[in-house]
Length: 133
Image (cartoon, rainbow, N blue to C red; front, side, top):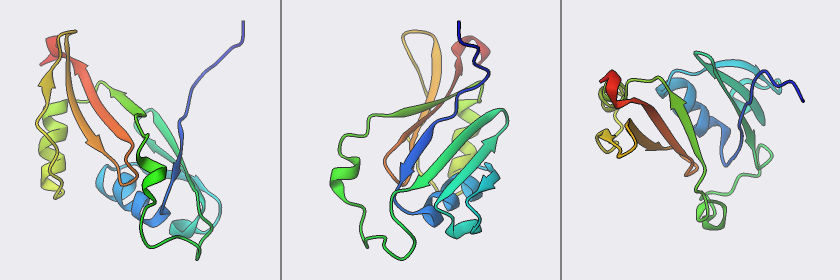
C-alpha cells in the first residue's frame, strides 16, 4: 500500500492577483509559499486551517488576456469540499465581504451546504452534517 498523508488540489487559474484577492483577502487563506514574486507569482501555495490549496497561473505575467476565455471555464464542474465549516456562519461572513452567495441548504443525504464559485468558475462547498446544525 502507498502511504499518503495529505492531498492538495492544484487549480489552474486565469489571474493570480484576482485569485489571491478572493482566496487570501476574502476567504482568509494564508500564503505558505510562492514562486518568488508575491502577488505576481505564477504559483502560490495557500492554507486555511488544515486545508491546503495550490494555484498555478495559466498565463505568464504580462501575457494575461483581458477577459477570461470561455473555453477555459465552460466545463468546470470541479468542486473543492471544505468539511467542518459552519455553512450558516460562512454565509454571513461572505455577505459581510460583499459577496452574494445563495443561502445554505440541507441535502437529502444529511449535509448542510453552502456553494460558492471562485473567479475562475471552480466550485467551493462549505459543508458539515445537518445534525451539527
